[in-house]
Length: 349
Image (cartoon, rainbow, N blue to C red; front, top):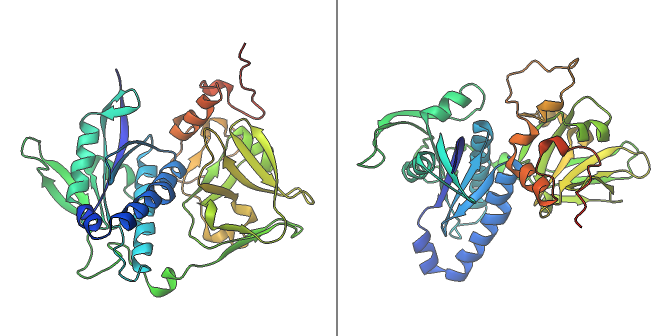
């Protein structure tokens, strides 16, 4: 069996049994929506993979610690917003734990100390909060603005060795957990954008899921630049006001949208092995791109040697992405050396 180092994210719903006993159909309906429109979408957008569901809990793996923590923050932010806007209608509140450790790949499942530690960290996190290990903290220190208290060494289970734990801590009575929402932030700010000629205009009524730079050859070819900045949003929150973009399958796994009149490149969406629940928009097409600073460099294997951005953001290769590995494998191209513009799936005789 394959062994590797991975960041593991574990989530669980606080008081789920009680919620089901009070309103079974309503709670299960919320769970289905949580799984697809919050957890599943956030994990995919941060290039992770949900490898196990435990009813009201989920386990996901990431090759990047930064993206695992960013995913956890966005999951809690989305749940906190819904809780504040639910008017006391039994919202789903999560605990999240994140570890970095050695794991064993067993088919589609993942086992080992890294998984066990993430699950135990989740169990001690406060409702609406996040608990991480010291190994995770060492990777994100100074890179992610997350208020974490040093809780010292804790024995998460009587048979375990003590683990150095960092946790978000909320003031008593705060509805948003560690997230300090104000009324202006809770109001859905409308994000707008469009092409150069104005034929394609869009508006978005939800915050971004993630942002970044992409250096891959596909993004370079489509955008006509050395690097492409992007911002991902829930697809259901994006509305095109006049004309729809024209779409072109730049690879067997993704479609990219552009204006048929002026040619401005606008969107990117994975369609294999299934259509994703998020839509990536080119940051340059937003009316206020300054509000969506990139948080990661991806596709770094294709970065131009004569171009560099001097920052300390995480840098990842396309092959590091579980989402891309799954997508390319689904069309018969598992080898990253075969990925690129207009790649052709192998013919099957």
